[in-house]
Image 1 (tube, one colour):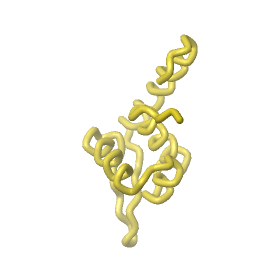
Image 2 (cartoon, rainbow, N blue to C red):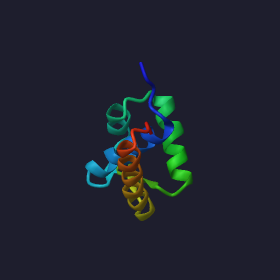
Image 3 (cartoon, rainbow, N blue to C red):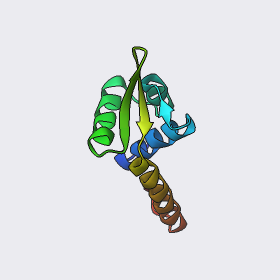
Length: 91
């Protein structure tokens, strides 16, 4: 079985958040991206530290929201993915 690259996992997370109207609960992200809790924390930390997402707390609930930088990068990553697929290069 082939493993996903770190880049594809990050793309999955950003896509899930975007599909949830730009804001998603950690459990939705974890199940949608098929990640363990520890892996989820690692990837969310990476995205937070690079300002692709922000953590939002509302009524004792935590959500992760795409930042403008996150929206820009997900669009660029989609272009790169289409380009690599056109050349038959796995991402």
